Length: 562
Image 1 (cartoon, one colour):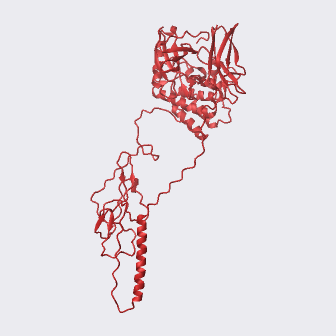
Image 2 (spheres, rainbow, N blue to C red):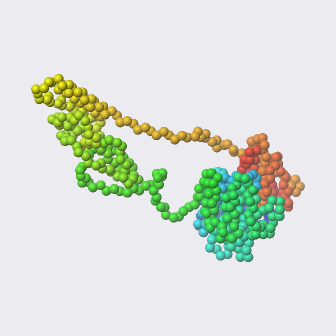
Image 3 (tube, one colour):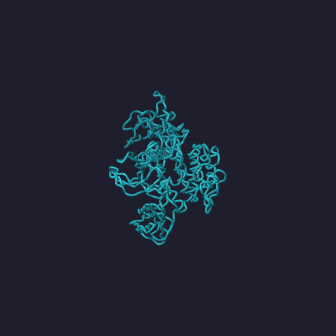
C-alpha cells in the first residue's frame, strides 16, 4: 500500500449522489454516497482503475459474492448491490456505519469488560457463520469491525477471504493480528487462524493495544513477529477482568493451532461462561443452523406440545354418570373433556399420566329414578326421603347437562305411625323432632342448589419493580458540524463547531490514512487542529465530540485538498 496516493475521483453512479471520501487502500477507495431510492446514505467501495487487470477484478467480485452470501447475519456489514461504473470500475454498495470503528474506539477510551465480551461473542458468531459456509476471513482486526447506528458490531472487509479448502490462499495479512503460522515459509490458514485473530481483537478492546505491542517500545514488524512466535501473552492489567478471561484469550492465541479452540463458536461459548461468572446478561450466539428442526416438549408452552391420544371404549360398563366439564386445549387436537361426578366430595383427581383424556369415575350405587326434567332428578313420592345423604352418592343415568334453574319437588310427609297401647306424648315429640330435622336438611339442600359457585381466588400478581422508561435521547452526543479547512504552507488547518457545547467537552480526532485505516486518535480541548500534509495532495481527519463522562459522538470527516 502507498501512503502517498490521493483518492481517485469518485465515479458517477446513476441513482447515487457523491458526498465525501471515507477511506483509501491499495486496491480500492471507499466513498460516502446518498442513494435516491430508497433514500439512505451508503458506503461505496470502488476498485482502482489500474487494478482492473489480472486477478484483482475476480477477487473483487468474489468479495461481493461472499458478503452477499453472509451479510444477512446481524454482525456482518450488509451489501446492497454491486456493479460496474460508467468509467469501467467495479464497485460495491454497502451499509454505511457512521460511528468510529473498534480500533478508534479502543484507542480513544477504555471499553468495559461487559462490552468487550458482548462484541467478542457477536463477532465470533459472524465468523462461525462464515466458516460454516466454507469461508476463512483471514483479516479479523478491530479496524475491520464497524459499529452500526444501534451500537452493534459489523464485520467487514472480506477482500482477502478465501475458502477453507484453498491450497494457495491469496497474500495479505495484518501483522499485529496474525497467528504464528502465517509467518512460516509456507503460510497456513485454518479455522484456528481466525480464532487467534478473534482473541487478539478482544485483547485489543480490553487494553487499547494489540496483544504483543509494547507501550513505548519498538513495535516494528520484525519485533512483533518475534514476540508473536516466542513470547507469552501479556496480562490484561485490569482489576475488573477476571483470571478466567485471560485464560480464555491465552488459549485462543496459543502458539500451536491445535491447542486453540477448535471453532469460533467454541470461543464464543467460553466468553459466555465468563459472562455467567461475572453475573452479566449472556449474549446469544447468532448462528444459522441448517440442521432440520427437532420437536421437543417444553414446559414453558412456547413450543407445540404433541400429546398422546387415549382411546376410550364406548361400551363403558357401568355407564358414566352426569359430568362436570372442564375444557383443555391440546396443540393440534380438539378440546377434550375431563369428567367428574358432581356429587363427589373432595377435589377432582389428578390426570393419570399427565394427559388430558377423559377420566371415568368409579361406579357407585344410585337410587331409582322415574323421570328427568331439565336435568333435575325427580324421586318417587312413595319412597320416604332419606334423613341423611351418604357420602359419594351420584345421580342416575341422565345426560351430562348443567341445570340453570333446578326444580325442588315437595317432600311427602311421612305416614302417621299405627296406634298403640302406649302413651302418644313421646311419639308426638319424636315426630316433631323428625319434622324439624327434615326441614333443616331440606333448607340446606335448597340453599346449596341455589347458591352460585364460589369464584376462584385469583393468584396474586408477582411483585414487580418500578421500572422507569428510558429516554432514548439520553446520552446522545451530536457530531461536529460546519467543518472547514484551509491550506497554510505545508499544513492543513481544520476547524469545526460543537452543536451542543457542554462543560468538559473535548474533541477526539485521527487522521485517515490512505490505506483506509484510522491513525492514532488524539484528544484536544479546542475545535481546531493543524495537520502536516507530508507531501500529500489531500489530508482527511475524523473528529468526534467527547463528553466529560466519556460518551463520544459519531465521527465527522473533513478533507482538505491542496
